[in-house]
Image (cartoon, rainbow, N blue to C red; front, side, top):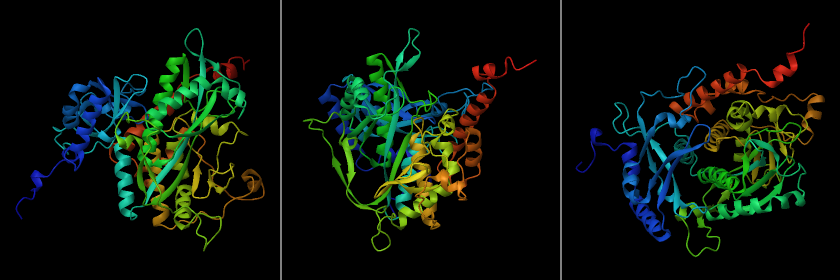
Length: 500
């Protein structure tokens, strides 16, 4: 047939992205926004293995060139260009090539704290001159992986897709004279409006910035740790929820600079009080329509994609009245079964730091440590928090949300494909149920153990294709080994005077 590409002429992944149908129109829309808003500078950003925002800044005059050619950074930027304990660069050495990051125009948005500047998320590709797979997807790009894994999940399950929301707890800390943390801004008094009020100037500015960048803020409260707030935004399609959580962290960091505070997302900075969790509320849907949330603004300070939410459709996690008035429907039950089956490996991603396990060991503070599920039962690793969704609890504030969403999709897929039954929901306090003889698997209780569970789980590892698992495992095993090889103040206090 004439007009068809031969194998040698086939488009690379990078070329297919740049030439995708409708992209040229989006690139033109961004130029119109640049001119309308007076944008002078653009951050081209993607996400590293630890969830950190990395990238480059370029004057806005070069938008069309960057939209076609991309920015280049070393492959090792996907691992924070970080050295392991043997002084080797994690993932990629200095001899490795440079990735090409191509902007996703529909994520373009003005920064509300300096309206001369905008940001756009990118998808990463292998260099065009690589001898093998030139211009292919860079598999250590966790955001790009999520896009492709979610698209495959939808294809395999007739359009079924993940919508989720997160509960990002974090702490607002004071700075001491040395610039280091000096306790929380407020007292650890849960739900008290007086403590919430003390942080009002801070959280109102966060909310203003969030709305200006497309986050539909829905509720917030003061939690039970020093300076700890939870400000929630509306759930949505998986990729946009991950982008919004990343944006939320960026906003909190900026507001902290403005108030001379520290925005702390560390999981467990204080013992004896609650940690910073980041529960994920999950559901699988068919259909739905895109709706733009304009927050009453006459002109959106970015493209419509940043301000869009998927609404309506069929929520498959709602109870099937013909089967049960309370249990999730069959797809929801299978999804729960898949998560419970793989909870050990998932913990390496949801609780991804050495410090994460301080949260699980600090007993009596509601952290989930057992692989079970129930209705409104916070002693379980999963709970049906409301009809139509369940809450995955073994995840904290340091999570890379793109890795987490991709891993959960693989667990869901396995649960659906194998028709996994999670068993009956547990209504008792799980600790009392185990005393009565119930057998329940325990989560890994250290980063090292969690990494072992991940290594043995091919389903969850499939959420980290190509180089992604190698980079993640290398980075996190190095973190664990550095911890094991370090003497701390605890060692000194415990052992200095133990003999003679």
